[in-house]
Length: 498
Image 1 (cartoon, rainbow, N blue to C red):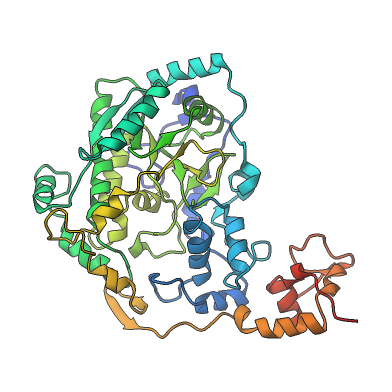
Image 2 (image 1 turned 90 degrees about the vertical axis):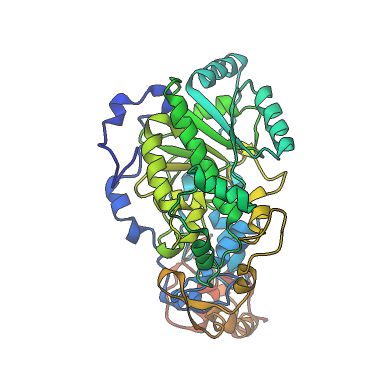
């Protein structure tokens, strides 16, 4: 349901929600925790790393703003984006920490998903949710799906191969669907048509949005594919709302046309709702890459905004993926209205990423997601490339088929700049200094050679396993503590030569 700032009165969902759509025993995130999220969602690091993370050399072409946490940027870039979101956040941070670009997670975690023991355990999750499904359950789930879920597929008229692929996939599962035309803005005529029929609001300026996107603070490429994707999803939501007037089904599932649903998708979806979904839910992403928020059950996280990122960038960088979106029909009109207001903000072009936009208002909307690190997942994606990426290469104002790169490609590779109001480029900064972990690495190598971290067997570092036999070491400000504990070199288990 819509939460703080809702568009309509909240009702007692425990009394009204059908049992098949949620589990009343799964507690949602408390309202007070959501109200306090602007503080609770921020990372708290030891002073050493607070300062170091501001000086870490940032990833190539990354946007920059004053006070930025570069450790967090590296965890996202190296641990999530580069790994196709297949790692848990713990695994991602550990990988970056090995390079000296972030603290180790068992010393000072960047807790992107709170309560990670529930739904963010990486390899430990293999097999979660895939208990044996008998023939009777599978058949009952097909009937449930037919009677409960209206399915819509987003597809461009030119993408016939994609339509054939998803049609075959859904047919194999016994799932009927309604095709919704995608939105292609590659040509001037197509853009004019989208404006005339209301797919893109008449008061939204593509030119202004592209200018903002070209700044170093936003650091985006072309936006035509992104705008088309947002318009298409909002249009599909409208189609689902219109369909609900003559269709009694309570849920709408909107699929992008390159997804492949797993063979047991239907019974597992029913299980997910009946066993794990809190009854306040409005929307569920069935595959969310780089999820941010709080785990509520073994396969679901409550999406919440990444308050470590600027609001003027739409809290961009996490909670990616609108591949398969499940909505409650009763909540969809209000949700679509709120999402559209967020998306069509030409001063914040990252909100044109419709998945990012919904995550940015997730403190007002009960939005849940299945982390993409979950194995097995509910679906696979990406085998046919990205139409949005292709269309983003078309320069605004060009004819269809001109794939020249947008002006922002050069802006993205320029030196970092401090963010100005509304995305304006401000004063250039010199490159950041290396973090303390890298500066002190030679000294730590010498320390390991001369003294070693063998003493941690007696006085263990915080988070060290096994624990020290005589207790835990305290931070005395020494090089030995920094090397063995802060930089976690006790793992190398070296002792001084005797």
